[in-house]
Image 1 (cartoon, helix red, strand yellow):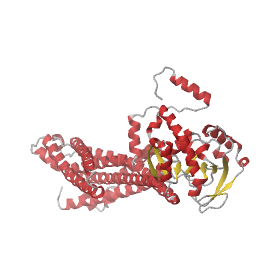
Image 2: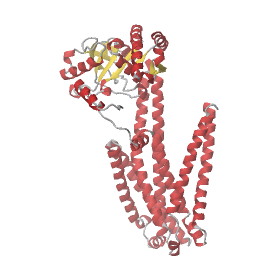
Image 3: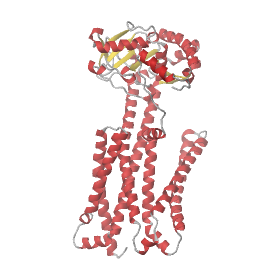
Amino acid sequence: MMSSEPGAVDKLMDWAESAGVEIEWTGLRSLRDLVEAYVSGTGAGFAVMGVVVLLVAVAAAWFAGRMRSRSLRLMNGVRPWRIHGRDIWLLVRIVLVWSLLAWALSCVAVAVGYGTTKLSTFAGISLAALAVADALVMLVAGAVSVATRPRAATVANRQPPVLAFTRFSLATRAVAVVLAVTIVPFAFDYAQNARDAHTMAARWAQADSAVTVSLTDAILDLDYEREHFQRLTPFAQAAQAEGIAALSFSLGELTTLENMESSGFDDVVVTDRRFLELMGIGVGETGSRGELVPSDSDAIPPALRAELEAGFELWTADGSSQGGYSYFTYAGDEPLPVIGKVLSNGDNVVVRNPLVIVVDEPMSFFDNSMLDAFMINGQMIFTDADKLRQLLAESGMDVDVMSVDGAVEQILTTAQEYEQQARLGMLAAAMALLAIAIAVIQAAQTWAGRNQRRIFALHSAGDSYLRIARRSIAGETVFIVVAAAIAAAVAVGALELPPSQTLLVMAVILPLYIAGTAFAFRATAAQSFRRSLHRQT
């Protein structure tokens, strides 16, 4: 609510109390909330984080490989800024070449798939994004270069900047573990949403001609809304007479029913005979996909019935809660088809034991505000697109309509979006795991470089490589357990992920990390021993 009138909030609260309405106050979203929504609400947010973590790991590995070269150049009198500049440029040059090549190939793909009309827009936006990404590469490379720079004192004492690389490696692994533990459940959630949307679209195969109406935002204006409702009334009457309107929605999705759980039903569904016919559900008789069995109102728990009747008094055109609808229970092998909060979201509402309220004539039963909401949410669909457009034009409501869209096409589009989010999430998880692998290998190489003489002596005396590295592997095991515990706390506490999913992901990551660490330390120890045999440092 926005108002400059003094006492507006108090007046609103007084009205809500007198009307029995509960108001929930929500403040403006902070920058932190927006960032969290971007990161956890889309696969792209996680993909960006995965790229950043992988970039840091690759940059650290790059400079670790050039550690000896940087020390030698410093000893030969090369200025530090020249050392930084050359190494950063070599890394950025590689990234630039490959990123520009990928950009050119993507432009070709867009031109082939979508034509040259969209190429200029895509090329400009993608090139700008690429420039930002390459600038980020330079910043990260510069930060890593400075943090791991060789110093004259350490070079004189023959001590490479191992501590800086160790810290980078630990930090990279910790962040990557947190990222992997939080990403994977979200990716699975995106994939499940995609499957639900596909399932919903398959169940709508018999209603592939159904359409929805997208209304203009102008109806939100109070003055315009009155004119809109004047046009909506004759349109609703005509649509009802032609039999092209079909209604379905879940009361459990739209509002909180305090007495539903104790009633034994898993949801309360409001629908009409036209929608049930489209879905193959028989009313009082067996349909191709299920049957609604009549239920006497006295069989409904009194508390639930009273709660529903109180709602109907607010939603109906005449303010009455009696007449115009009937109660049914559902008998079918498959869940009852129901439209969720918004049709275009592809929400596959699964109800197996619902109380079904079949409204005789929904277009005249509900008031204009409810009909308007049903149309906006896609819970009111229409079975004949041509007749719908005709009625919209005759009632003058065509000025309020932005588009007439296929219902199934909207669900399939949503499914594709969920699939894209799932792919981005899994890509981010893969990059996080790759960053962990790079950091572990770097840690193992750093350990082997510092302990080359010890490895040679102990292995020559008969100790196995794993025995020599057992303390370091034990330290890595403690590290991954602590990092995974922190990641689980973040996932469950901050992001509210299910504990079962988080534990499942940890149960997979922990053994893989420990096994990979043991393999990396054994391999680097063997490499170090061979280098010692050939008198290589």
